[in-house]
Image (tube, rainbow, N blue to C red; front, side):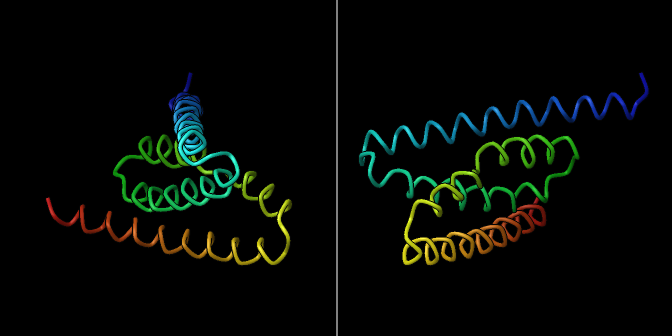
Length: 128
């Protein structure tokens, strides 16, 4: 087995493990919200929470030192934690008066969150 084949296999395993962990955390957040505030508002609120938190975390991940860390936490964990399919279903089931502002707010806060995470990572790396 060559080194590149081994690294590729290792990368798949890292994405698999991180994705499972991220999806589990997303499910737990949705479950806790449903128990505490009820089913009606949980769907839209949890989408905002996981996608914006995921964007912030992805900004932090971009500054990680090793490729394995970025694969596990970026493609794996953050990929499993955030949910674009959930956003698509939410937007499809809402009226345009709700869907368009919600999408603009969520994506705008996601971009801001990523920038904040990336800037925080730079500050952390520059202060030993």
